[in-house]
Length: 160
View 1 (cartoon, rainbow, N blue to C red):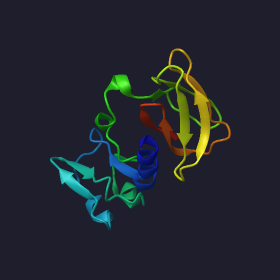
View 2 (view 1 turned 30 degrees about the vertical axis):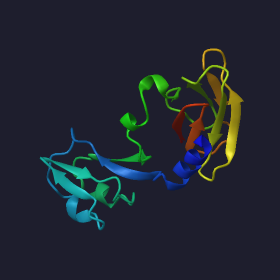
View 3 (view 1 turned 60 degrees about the horizontal axis):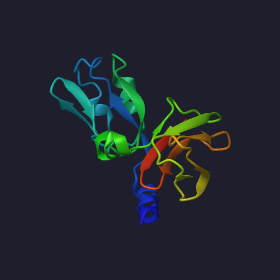
View 4 (view 1 turned 90 degrees about the horizontal axis):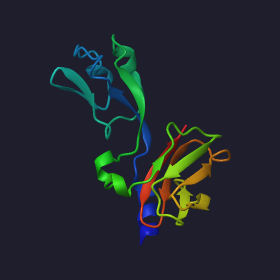
């Protein structure tokens, strides 16, 4: 059952680059509103707001912002609070970068860990140690979003 959910998630998840407004830098001038052909940018109070579901990542809005308040961000469609309690989630070493090892923590001790790409192919397979940790060798894995599955936990790993 867990594998079916994982494959469906990979096929349906909206992994993509989007643009986000830094509300600290935004002065609410509204210059970016007309730059978006999809209408993804609206005003939310005094600041611009970009709807991640509508944004196609074209970046046209960046050129219209006089304060450089719009930046690119990887969007998975998952809010952190939707993933489960913090005690039951897998976590990774900070800033995973392709070509280096990534330490996974929070797995059930001695459990099998699978890293699955968007096509549903297992790209890494291993077992967690007694502390629920596993060093994932990312040297042969291209950058992107991956689903990481433990016996009872699922998480998304994004590498660049």
